[in-house]
Length: 116
Image 1 (cartoon, rainbow, N blue to C red):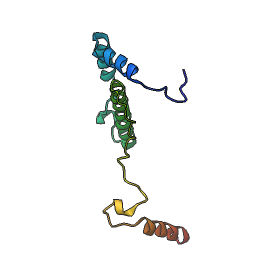
Image 2: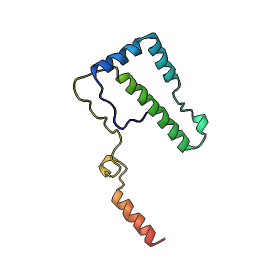
Image 3: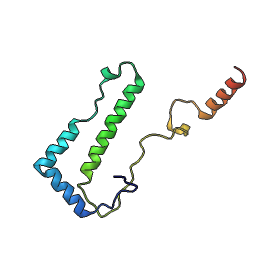
Image 4: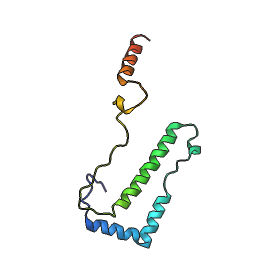
């Protein structure tokens, strides 16, 4: 099954998901899915920061999917609000209080290229 665009969600679909999640089978199925959450064990990653970061991202993504599934049980006639990006703009020096300037860093990098 390929989804190019999610199908329209409506009040009836939300009620069906809500009924399913509140049923014994739905509740058990959801708990089974939740128990399969990827671990964020530091021991598995060892000293590899990339592995640790990725395992954290996998776990966060999995939890986001579970929250989205639970959210499907709710219905509102108002349009959904897009998620807000919690990360600052990396190009905006005002978002960081380290005193460094991106433009200064670019100039320094250019100077390093010219004078190795």
